[in-house]
Image (cartoon, rainbow, N blue to C red):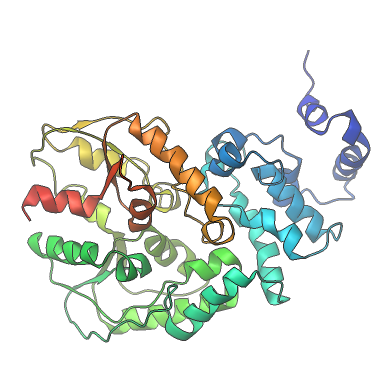
Amino acid sequence: MPGKWDWFKDEIGFSNLLTGGKMLLKVISGKLSADDLTKCALCPNMCRHACPVSIVDGRETTSPAGKARVAFMIREGRLELNLENLEPLYMCLSCDICTLYCPFEFSVADLIRPIKEEAVKKGVIFEDFKKVFENLENYGDVYGAKSEEENGRGKVLYIRGCTIRNELPELGEKALSLLKKLGFEVFTINETCCGIPAYNLGNIELFKKLANENAKKINQSKAELVVTSCPSCAYAYRVLYPKYGVKLKPKVLHIAEILEDRLKGLKAEGEVTYHNPCKLALGLAQKELLKNILNKIEGLRVKEPRKEFFCCGYGGSAISRLNPELAEEIAQERRKQLKDGADKVITACPSCKLALNSDELEVLDIVEFAHQLLGE
C-alpha cells in the first residue's frame, strides 16, 4: 500500500535524502515551523503542470515549488540575498493558476513576495526595476509619461490604466464611447498608476504611496462608480487596497462586468474563442464572465480554448523586463492554444491584447467587440 509520505521520498530522491530528510524531521519534531512557505517548498510540485513558466522554461528553480524552495532557503539564511538567487523568484507571472491545483490554495506569488520586499528594502534591486520605480515615483506612470490634466465630472469614472494611456489610446476612446452608448454619465481624470507594478516587484512602500494618492484622487472626483478596462487596476482597487487599509468610496467594476447583461440578445456571426485575463478570472473570481458574455450573443459560435487559464506571458511585471525572450515564448505557447479554437480571440485586458495579437491571430478586447456589435 502506498504510504502517506511516499510523494516526499520520490520528490527528494535518495541523493537528497540527507538534506530533505532533515528538513522533514524538523517539521515533524516541531523544530521548524510548518508555515505556508515551508509547506509549499516541501510539495512535489503538484501545480507544475499548469504553471506557464514551468511549461515553457522547464527549469526546476523556476517551477512553483522550486521558487518556494529558493525563497525558503533565502529566508532561513541558507542562501545569500543577492540578484543571482533572487532571479528565480521573479520568474513568476503572478497569475495564480497554481492556486487551482494546490490542496491549500496557496498563491506562490504571495508566498515569495516577502523575500522580494526584503530585497528592495536592502537595495538588492535589478537595474531593470530601478527605472520602473523611478517612473512611478516621478510620473505616477509605469512608462514614464505624464498624464494630461483632466477635470471631468459625472457619475461614472472611467480609469484607463497605464497600458491604454500609453499603448492603446484608441481602446480608451472606444470604452468611453461604449459606456456613453449604454447610458452612463462617464468622465475621466488625470489618473496615475494603481501601483501594482511596484507591488509585484516588491516595492511595497511605493505601492502604498501610489495607492493612497490614487484613492485620494478618485474619492475627490465624487464618482459613484469606477469602471476600468485593466484587470490589474480592478484587482488592486478591490483586493489590494483594502488589504493595506486604503479606502475607495465608489464601487469598482471591470468593464466586462458592466457588459455581462448588456450584450444579451445582440447578434453576430462567426466563430471565436476567448482568453481569460488572470487578474479578472482568478484575482477577481470571474472565471466564467467572459465566456458568459460571449455565449449570450445570438449566432456567435464560442469555442473553448485548449487551456482555459494560461497567462499571456506578460503578467507579474518582472519576466517581460528580466527575460523578454521567455515572456514571448509563453505568449507564443498561448497563441498556439488559442489558434486551436478559432482565428479570432476575445479577451478583456489591454496587456493581453498587446501580448497575443499577431499576424496569425486576431485578438480583440471585449470593448472593441462590443463596440462593433453596437455599431461603430
